[in-house]
Image (cartoon, rainbow, N blue to C red; front, side, top):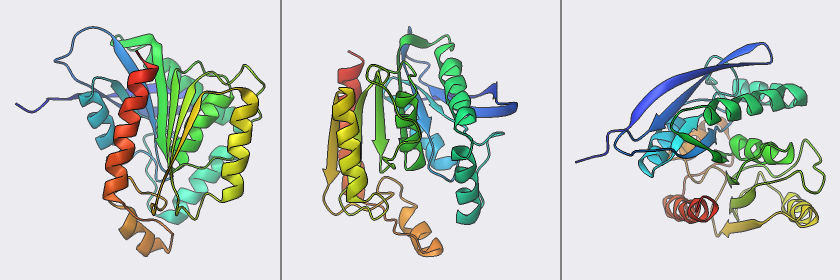
Length: 245
């Protein structure tokens, strides 16, 4: 029989705003389990992110598709998405409050092992996952899928606690080589346990089946890559098994 995933909306407050995230877990499993903060592409909390949360729940996690814009907002188009994303980085202290509140919300869930929490995300969400590590959120691991690697906060050695998996497309035109070099240098200087997987031929958005159509619609260098989607998912599973053992 197929797994019946249970979902709920979880609310929290941060920076004077209301956030409504989407949490998924497998009720057939017993006991506490690792929790994953799942952070969105610049589109916000959409069906794609909710699907990923359900898939992660099927693997045995409590997965929270996380609202970062407030009120469960999803951008209507690329212009609005850019405006919303830029708004996050225009107020870094507020961004940190939002991400910490998401962490505390997931950590407090009765099914979550509070000592086994990770963050992962897609595009913007990958960058936000890394930002959580940089500002010292006590995560066990971070996974970034085709995410930006630039930093909005300079961490000191010892502040960045999680292990890191970067799933990057070699043909990603939105993440230049100099950003990759700077990121590796940063991780090395901080002493972070990180793995950088570069997938040949994969472009930005390679995990999202809607990426190719959205790229054409908005004239963006996006493309879905089914093979890389599958491979990066398997790489992620191996990473979480190691991090949470």
